[in-house]
Image (cartoon, rainbow over all chains, first blue to last red; front, side, top):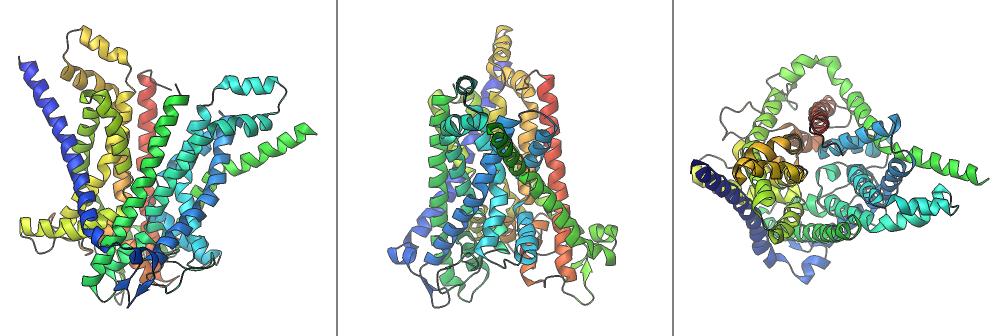
Length: 283
Length: 294
């Protein structure tokens, strides 16, 4: 009898936990969506800011975030996939791989603001790229590299060994096997990892704070060496800078909603795709 | 000919694979190098345990104890929110959810883990802070308590998702053996499944903590920003991350202030490094012990 009561109490508590969690998260999304919705219009999405950030749209911030994300993926994707191929195909065990694994794990835990400091000291000042899309993309690339490596490695691992052996037995070299057999099979898994990283890179603020972002630009950036507006930084700047807080709040709600929708859609797409892929290939 | 090409390709991959090691070493070197010159003027002890952070005064004072204490308080507070709720959610998904619920809840939690921290900061600043200010009748809603609450909620999906992974690693036979001995579901959960997955659960908690300590934008917007050692949980505080983010823009490159901010970054990096090493150590040790090494 006593045991049954404990079980009832315990199960009630954990049910309550998940209800509270979902309520918290749903209310965040609901409140931002309901207040941000009125700010969104075609003009808001496609025009440049006017009257010192109190009117007009946020198109340069959306475009800026797009450039930063594309830039970081271009840098991190080849590096990440190459690293995963090395770990999984060329050298699955050994001293070197242990060191690489350890550095990936630790790199994944570095706070985002520390990446920002590194980017400031190295890309902005030492290499002289200045506050620019290039510096911001390089900094974001370092941040997303560990997750691209783990996603790629997971999908390489899911490729059955028999396929590799069949290819090698037919006389293909190791590189031919990787290029023509292993990579194409693992590609969907790698892509979902990349899409997830896009969502992450789009929402990060601290790494671009000192390396790429500016509050206000009249024109779109037209070279990688330009500084840029970016959605997440724009939300922060609207709340802490500027002269018309009352009007800026409405714009900030609009930006938050756009960012939230972009990030949630991207990660939902990637996660659903990945789960589908896992259930067809892995088991 | 062919084997030469193969060797070159392998060499290229080997070199590229060391990129993450290069980045990690680069971060360490840069942090040490850029913070070195502050320690020529102030010794490490005075820097870490100094009680006054007045970087813009004449003469400037660089004591980061208030910032460390602030980070510690905010993180501790956030743990009270994210451990019970995150772990509870993981237990629900693992034990009580039907197959269909599981199919829906797991991805939802994972998707929610992706909400950008700036959105939490914005939400905390505009909605949570005024609400708590009225509720508790305090002078400002931007304080350690609010920061803890918002950060705690932010970390729930991370803790829940990783803990659920750990719970699902427990072999089915453990559960069946426990039922066969007459234990009910709750007893099995508390006495068999949780102990068996405790390493994974602790790892998820430590990684959640590491994420909270290093979180920047949310605390920057919500914690209030005053660099004094807090006396109550409703005092405004200025954790390490938000100090770096807020002050780097106004410090001249190469100034004492600039180097002091890098020194804070170094200490922050070392703290999270310790968390990660401990987490890795725990997960390795216990997995081997339980025969779950895979």
